[in-house]
Length: 321
Image (cartoon, rainbow, N blue to C red):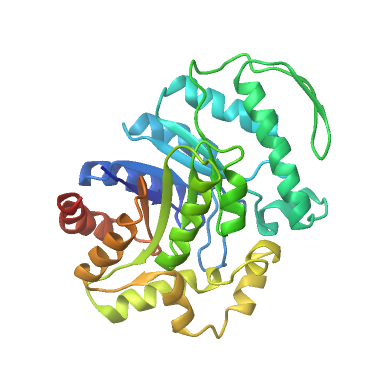
């Protein structure tokens, strides 16, 4: 049975309101939750970026939901610190936490003052970070000299069972590469043919574990409102790699997306006032055999979305499944 989760978007919503939203999502029938991890929003209109790891401790305590987070170790975060964060949450909330690891975006990582590496270097750096994190979670003392450096690190607080480390990918090639090291795969909504190719590439290369899918949606009682929400909040998020990886600031994203046509927004967000259309889109994703779908309503107000999807969309999907 596919798990339906609520995506907590720190770039858009104050962490106190986001905590209220995820508590409400559990009561409304969502099965799980996942969290972004940004230093900067994608647009000045979004206007937030709370620290995900502080928030996750509160959210795990306030709910009984399993949680995941998408994180980029290697520049803004040292991998030993991420291993400690993963280990502590895993020890406090056994079986309820996973972390997805990716190569990151300059908009979050440039704050260290270090140069933003080429994609091939970022990929190699991530692989080193994964090995460091795994070894630390296994209880080893780790020293490492490479693209990241570690000196005699050891985790003194660890869970009995290390949390899953999920591979984050948006391309077929990266999905195939994730199969070498990941305990599962996470990606974002795209045409089903592309998603199927990604999932097949991951599985054919020996990829194990669950497949997670984050789905951007915009819903409101009226179509014009659903479109306005998506355009106002998410038109800065339509750029494919390498643009989304390499722009530095929210202001840069705002400038390049100023005259973005609505058609580009609806390529990356499922926008409709018609709940039947949302059910249909989600049923297409279910046909791919994904294990978890995290729904991200791209608006800043979440309550109406949570109530409506909890009452009218999720039951239909569960009945179909």
